[in-house]
Image (tube, rainbow, N blue to C red):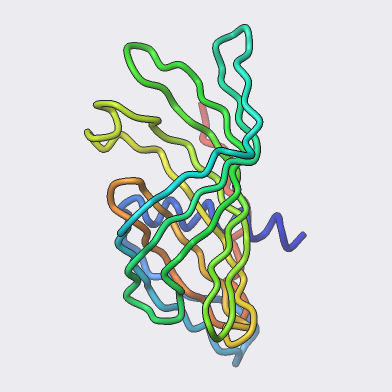
Length: 188
């Protein structure tokens, strides 16, 4: 249930990071304090992929499948609680796109290690592979939900990252804000 809740929270955060402005407050029992929520941003400084252990195949439909790619990114964060090096192991599929380029869909395990603790969790991404579409900023999104350990125990980082702009998101202290009840589908 926690995994489902974290995944849903990550999806909501992705929408918020997409340009909507709104204040998020935890709603709890009478007299309870809302979670402390701190915005964070990170500028991508460097990126390196190690595909030496990657299992790679191309299906008859032209979809490329890769499992076990290792990706390391270095960031300059505006919050010192996030260590600069982010390591990921990716499983991804690349789909041909009409015109040129392609779209990659991946899931990853994510880890940031620092001298006082670490952040671990999962991520997912849907966006351009390369070419003019990447430089034009066509981007659907990524989300990462990371749980703090050591000095970061009790914290959760929810990040949206783009290959051009870096990462932005929130560090939440305490319980994540509860999700509202499901929305009714739009009438036809």
